[in-house]
Length: 541
Image 1 (cartoon, rainbow, N blue to C red):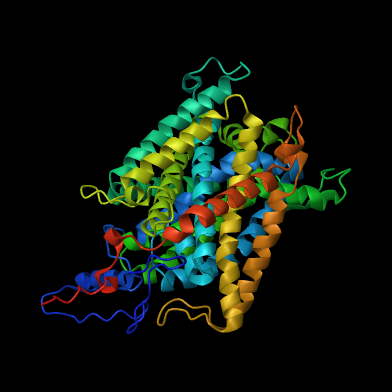
Image 2 (cartoon, rainbow, N blue to C red; image 1 turned 60 degrees about the vertical axis):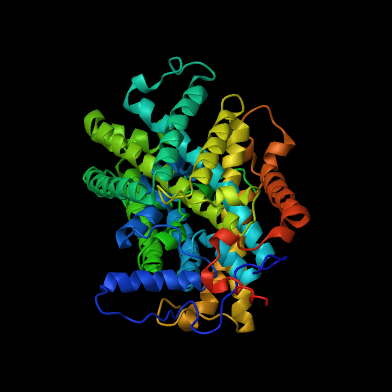
């Protein structure tokens, strides 16, 4: 039994986790044999199988793509990119994709070797040790709870534009009407995601997969409709139109600010691997799902943004930088078609929140299973009826609702917190790719045999992933007043909020871990594989 400092589940000798050895027995189907292989690979990490394996290849793909959520992200943030860099902001989409692709390729190797729940936590722990693992998991769990709140706010951006009946608080003209209504709508959504995630992964996967199908079909139809209404050529994407004037870096500075709109969307693809303990053949399916989710999001999202900029009637309309894609759809396609599209956006927001919540639950469960959180035995308890960790589902939902309340009278603080949540996710990714690079340089990294590997491209891809993560984290955190303190009252702590908040979360959290929790870490007895249980004591005479 390993319960001392820095000791997590051990990997026993013999066939490694990438080489499960299970004899095929007469009467067993290939699915039974594969399921046993999956469970045996989990036991090799010191954990006993507890979560139900009910997810197929499409389910894992849907989990990744719904977290990215093309329609949610583009409709929520299009206005921001256009506001700061005009139509040229579109080029940030392929830029962010290429950078995140380097990260995703590293994650694919890790998903094939370590197909366990709470991927970011377990990967950083395996690569960098228990301290790095705890920090990576802590940053990701915290960011996920804030991200859930941010996604829930997207209801307010879309539903009142479909019908004023969704403006339950006032008529929207009051100073806090929109904020209060956003909290009301967001709370309803979070209660829904809490219930669905608590009642079992199969229900979650069914709703999520159905929602993703609706989102993908709607996105493809939207691309076709916008393409049919193109009024200008691609030359519009290379005009600066005065954006960036007066800035030290000129248009490049404006472009870096606008690129946050793309950076805020294209992450979360690791969710496909975080469901590894609930998926069939995760070593094979998770890497594919990660790449498919990212590439599909890039292609579909990129075409929506491109054709929206080429089809909008007035490229210089102020509504473009206020109402964003909602304005483009309604003004270009008309109110009837536009409202149908906006309803599909509502579906996308719903499944996005569902996926974000699910990812947070798996992270909390994985950390608690290693006794890395307060009340770990309670958080890591799997409901025998539903086969899911119910307590973290409820806790994450309650925290997300509490964060929403901040938005009522302190919208600037909420904006700072949600922006910083994205930074923490990029930092958490760095806590995976950086120790992975160190292992490559030391020659100790070994991908899973017979599964996804980058081969000789591994080192350059890993280097680019780390450099990209550092550069984008700095770009996201840069103390721009237009991002972190756009309107009065102006406060220095809001402008420097990224460095302050990330420092407080990381420093305060790690201080707690170092002073209180680290001496207690180690796989809880109830979750330890029988292969790692101590042998029974010999009977005494």
